[in-house]
Length: 180
Ligand SMILES: [Zn+2]
Image (cartoon, rainbow, N blue to C red; front, side):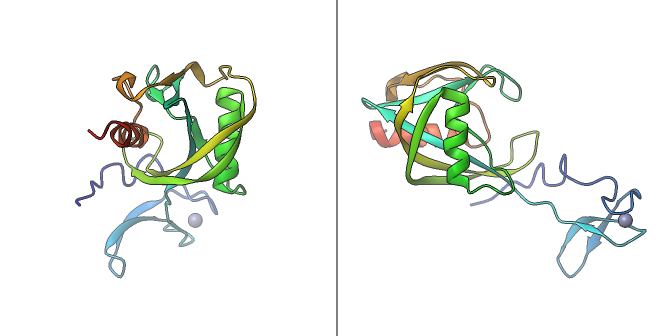
């Protein structure tokens, strides 16, 4: 499979050194065969890493819970309840936290479903981890980041799906359920 390398440096490339504040320079590192941002003053090298997102697959009566985004990117499009994992947080904890924030539901994480790379998010490239979850409490309600919430049957999946691997994961679920 050919992986596109668009979005590889921007917007996550450091333009100023976090140690000394000097302007960073793009240099080709021969031993690694790629360009990196390097501080010409103190030698600090910026190694950008993938952002990690975690989300939940909540199914009830054969339907999947999706949330409609209230903000950009992909404002108005539908995605799985999900968000970025904090630096000190296990991803399954982040998935349950985001489910609560975005849907009002308390969930129990049952296991991982899939993990997908994405390079179409203007905030940076990442990896979205999707966990199967069951509802154990709470009440369905929108949060600060969600304009609308709904369960969709496989043949009701909306056309406007968010990127950042959400579209891929939602269509994969749809395909598993319909066999198409
Ligand atoms: Zn520096």
